[in-house]
Image (cartoon, rainbow, N blue to C red; front, side, top):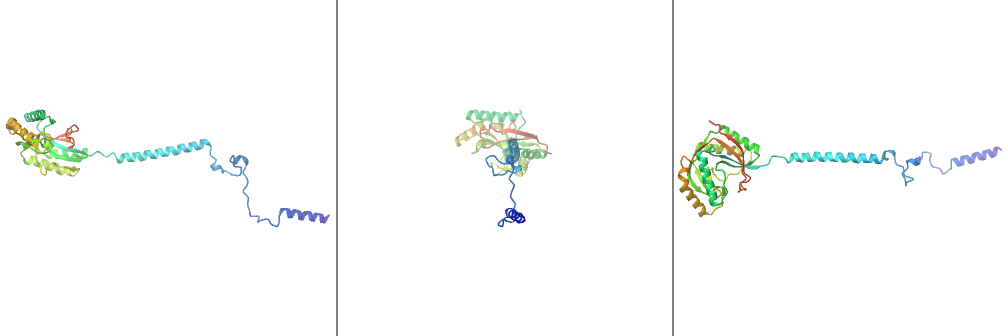
Length: 274
């Protein structure tokens, strides 16, 4: 009986600890409960962190979409701020006689009659005090305002009826230069050069009042110059055509627009200098 017990004890030890068994340090991953296993994959365990319901996925996608839209809005806002700089346009500064004065009515009469005769565009008679600057409107207006504040009233008198080859100087009244007129032009040139790109139609300032705009052949220009001189020369070159400018005006004048449909008056400043 004792031998039998010994043999049974030996069998039990042999069964629980076979000679070829590996070290007891080996661990085995426990099999998860059936309700935690993916459907169709009996042997694959899905950790709880990755088990997201349909509603959870939808919320995550909506959050991602909102974040992307917010980032896009910020980017577009930065781009719009970058590209909303004030536009650069062309501006000129004019002087002229007081409205409804004898000189203003005479100049208008000659311009309108010439335009009807030649089928050329009519325009507002003026003496260009400075042309042309390309810059921001606010900067141009500030520069013109500074010059007007220290410039006295400008006397203008004409000495001849002339013709030229440029579109805006086809037939014109050539003005006499005086210190006030020349100094005002020089002051505007300095101010405008500091704020934009300056383009002058002539190498030297040539004050004039245009009477005809257009690309006319030489004989037509000479014929028109002679006709105006004969009919209006005495008045234009005398006291009736002379005037004293009391203000300067700033105009947006695209030199490429010969129809002048885009031209417009921006501001007018009284001359306040001593």
